[in-house]
Image (cartoon, rainbow, N blue to C red):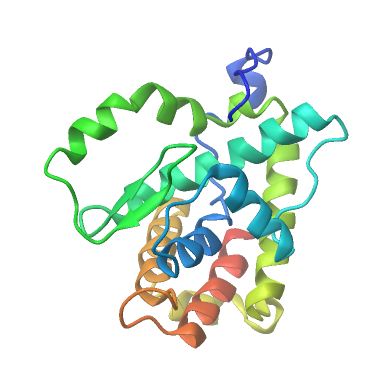
Length: 213
């Protein structure tokens, strides 16, 4: 069960991160879990599975805050993934029934509108109850764990080589890089039809190089 939403105590100017530019790295292992299982998941079962794989660690010494932050990260990733998979697939996002469907329901847009307030809440990093730098460091740590999990070694790539892998020009903006990363990661994810683990790993390495420059 999700905990009650804490009030936002920081100002917009102090945070500047309502839509953080870092991708949530839990998106990709979640997609693997959802695609390889025909059953529906509960949010705490997903958390336990990611913890077992070493991809989700303790986030706060206070047990209640730790539970809230863990659920926040998972719901943020699930709503991001739901948007990314449309219109090819439908990801049902409910805390006690999370499931990936091959067919998109005819009323998918209405279902998203029905959840809009909850979606907006979990996609707004100000509600994570911390500062922008902490969020950035946390996501960077998660990315490091995920790279190790899939065997990616971004240090081996030079910046220009990373641009070439991502099929980007030298003047690509941060938005261009992020959009292309999501496109290629979704295309080559090993749990997608015609996915390729080696190419996904290479794209992941390139993304890590480009996002740090």
